[in-house]
Image (cartoon, rainbow, N blue to C red; front, side, top):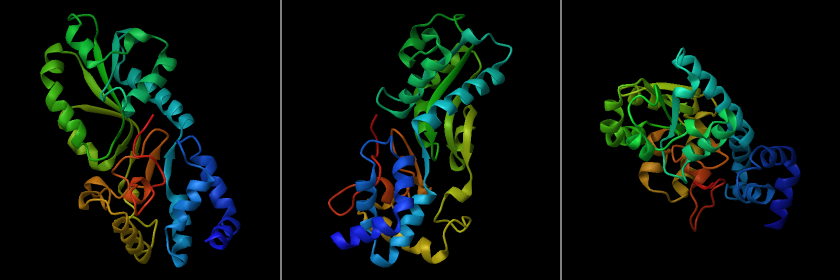
Length: 267
């Protein structure tokens, strides 16, 4: 085993070092974990594992700060000429979820704590104290989570009779149609169909490589609904604070038989 580790770290030193640098602000990810992850692939599939590393779309802390800044500009542009301090930003998820990461960065960006509220605050605010609502989240893969959220909050939001939008850092194309049924969308980045790396429409991997990737996804031991990523999204996407389950399970599923490269969630 040690000879194989030495060979991998020597032959693929540049690629592993680059991945360790790119993913370095995700908890626990460094050269040792990346090497262990590669070792789970058969010798003949080591080049494929390294290729997968290079195809991962990763959003670091720096990326997230830049994207939040862009999202603020998009928001103010969409709701112009409403006064900026009359626009409220409300994270969609619970305190430990990705939307709270966006909200923390947003506080530094707009420097106005009073513009950032929670759903519980919205229920208590008097009519006329705000003119627009922006609901924040980091990512939507299929739109199903947002659809469930909307079913719960619709009776609270609609009676306010103000314009509103859902603002996302990253939107997977599969989610757009679902979310647009009930809200306008603001997003910094939209992932098109080529990001489903095991689909026929994506040219990132050959047909033979896709079959191998699917084989390793099954090897992780995750349940059937996640074997191609939840919703069969087939993504290779991760954030500093989480790896969505719409990504292939080789990235995030950890059990006795497989160690994911990234944490499924965690701040």
